[in-house]
Image (cartoon, rainbow, N blue to C red; front, side, top):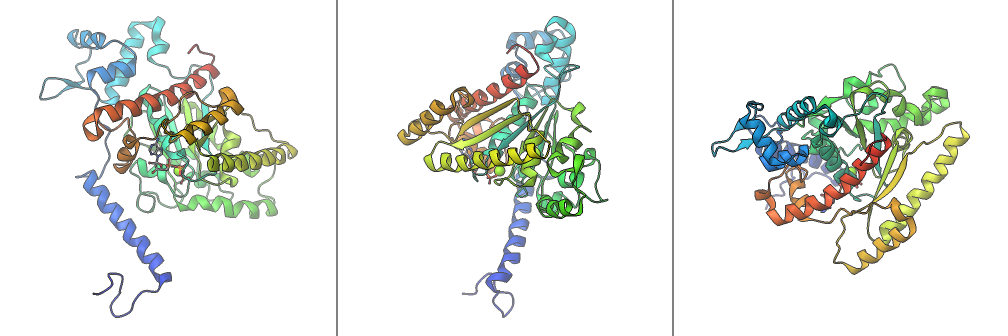
Length: 405
Ligand SMILES: Nc1ncnc2c1ncn2[C@@H]1O[C@H](COP(=O)(O)OP(=O)(O)OP(=O)(O)O)[C@@H](O)[C@H]1O
Ligand SMILES: [Mg+2]
């Protein structure tokens, strides 16, 4: 039988297959996306039921029904079965109405940053691959946007997994000079940060996508240091913090999903961050790897301080990810971490669940899927755990704004 990878008469060499396989995979993923999101291959956010909308807004469902009866929410579409289907835009519009009607509770309905409060920059990091950095980032970004905050998600990983969850395929949808690299590069082709920010299908959530060109920062930084382009305020670790000031006013929270390496780009993100979240699987080998990450970070912190800079974190938290609470070794590792780091380990762990795996297959978070897609009980349990993690992070954000939680 003919090898499908044969081209004409000649078999491809393994080296030639690298390019061939890359092209085949790109084309397949493109086709898959068109099938998933036909007819225009655009991704949409699902609508939410009355109880779901009420819960995100933080009101009883009866209040929502009364608003409907009073004719305050004619913009919400009614489905064939007579039930209302709330889009996130609708939910945010209702938040506005409520904040105006009840000024004393305005902050509860419109939790956005107030004058004088600073945008919070959160980095999700660890150099251990597969520790759920991207999964944690996307769920946090979706959760905060559903709470009514203005969120910017920044994909710092050349693998572009976070971008993929926004249906953004790096080699098709992200052109040259369209990642964060474009705004922090050292040469004349640098562009304003605004230019690389994209609106997404998620109301209130913007994205800076990634592709392989982000790797350029790792290559060009040593050259820039030698040539003197990266001195003083231009030093590599300040480059992300500096450009963020151009857009910070437009957001409440900025989230960095970092790559599984501690390169110049990750460092620049950690330097800009006010909160660092280290994701760790509850296994000894992962904890040992995290130890190396912390040691490296501690060394680099020293180097930054020697050059006159200072990392300024409001908080550092560990998030136990992919946790199986029935697994004895995992329980042991989790207790070990909690004994060592106390309240710096989030109380809630992100449980290992098929809900996240199945949602991931559709390039979705568990906030986007419906119970029918993956099973009501599985989704409920997954939401309890992931909401728990996200609520704790949201509390930290609110505390740093000086608000009661
Ligand atoms: N709570 C969970 N339950 C089940 N699967 C999970 C969970 N969290 C993450 N995963 C799966 O684990 C895999 C790795 O997760 P993810 O891509 O988030 O890790 P990462 O740290 O970003 O990886 P990388 O280091 O490559 O960037 C993914 O397939 C994801 O769907
Ligand atoms: Mg990742």
